[in-house]
Amino acid sequence: MAYREFVDVDGRSWEAWEVRPGTIERRLNDDRRELPRFSDDRRRSEFQFRMHESVREGWLTFQCGDEKRRIMPIPEGWGTLPDSALRGLLLRATRVRTSGSGSAHSTQPAGEAIAPLPDQSDSVS
Image (cartoon, rainbow, N blue to C red; front, side, top):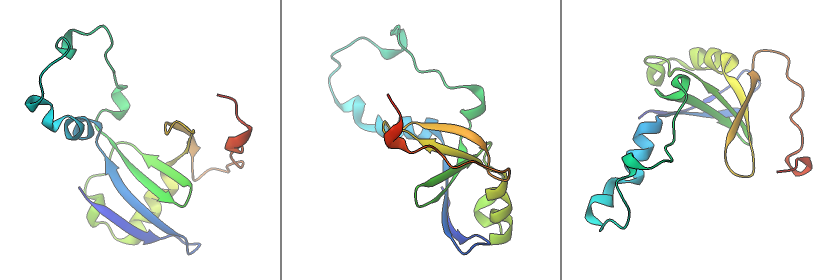
């Protein structure tokens, strides 16, 4: 999995990495086979997490300080693109804001005029 750092046209440093939900779930559950089972097989559970089709294959995340953006699907060969191409992807990426619970909410593509995001402390959960 690639990880990149680059600088945008305003001189801000950005990090970029890919997120693949299926890979994350497997990493979290790698050692579960070694533990005794205390519940039924989770495939028979009434609760199942279902991902929307648009995010199943993952996304590319951009982060600069508290600002996060994402683009889906993960662009082919993004890890070897020149910085100028990463800046172009950053402009097309959708800005997301995170709530206190860590979940992300899409707002709108970053290349469009964006109003400041509301202060998180003003929101009611």
